[in-house]
Image 1 (cartoon, rainbow, N blue to C red):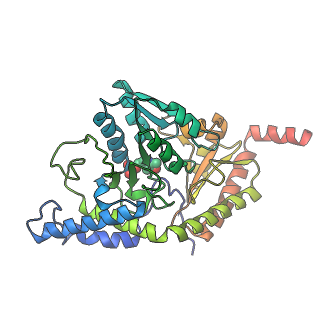
Image 2 (tube, helix red, strand yellow):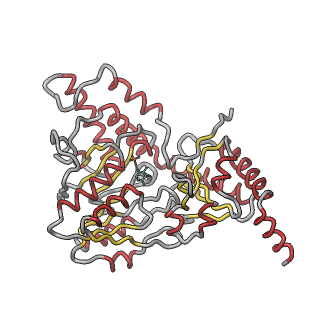
Image 3 (tube, rainbow, N blue to C red):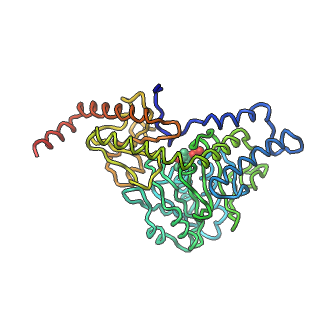
Length: 397
Ligand SMILES: *Cc1c(COP(=O)(O)O)cnc(C)c1O
């Protein structure tokens, strides 16, 4: 039986997998030890559980367990990477390279650093959301200390050529950080093959709990950074604070599951996404794909429905949870900066919808969504004077 409403917004967050929840539960009750208090079994068992989680996370990205620093999420990991490296390498250089389509968790720390005298280059992207390797090479100067480019974009799903970017960074002796909040567990990542020095990931984007994440910090050659907080010196002195044992256990289990199911899940999601795309294309006129046609996250479909307000579409589709290309955080919604960066007009940016398919979506839900979206778009267009004008001019020509 189809259960409504349908959740199809798996880039904003994901449901905790029941196998993850099950693993976490004892750590809220009987296994409540502090992982830093290992003078007794309570603490030792908590510490052992955290070490097992560290291994699970490390294995997912091809790292060593010691290279994993637990954080409160990808926002903290991004801040720690960008600000921590900038502070540590201040005497070596004062230039960072990132891209216009990064998440705010990278853009905003970079912008804050510019107020403190650092120089930041925001690379442009092409119409598919890809950075240009030549533009990257040209942006590197002797003062460049860090390149931060996300592995995959949270709005349009575009997957960046991280391996090539890693090669460029390594050749120039510049550190590479990647925000892999969307990519980890969804596409293969190998920090060594890709020459990644720092990598952020988040529990709640991969069927784990909210409020936990990790930062990979390379040990060979060692990457050093200044911590965001001072305290007990946990996590190789990079992140003080008592470990959130239940959340960490959940993140570890989520990584293990993602690693073992990645291939099967990515082909299943790719075919669901194609089914959704084809279904909509066959029923709705004037839709365009945003993001890269092939180099994209398996579950991501970002479409613009010309002559329709994305916000209106969302509000008329009560049974399907998706998100739109407008940041409706204010009374005057701004179109998404990501969609603007790939060259979309304000109209098409406002007309965009992001579908984020995930582990728990079914074919039946996709079929329901196709019908629901098609009917809603048709109804909204019937009420739109611009659509009527457009039809009149199409039939005249
Ligand atoms: C969700 C997300 C973040 C923030 O992660 P939190 O764990 O919620 O702090 C950062 N970057 C990207 C690309 C994301 O998708």
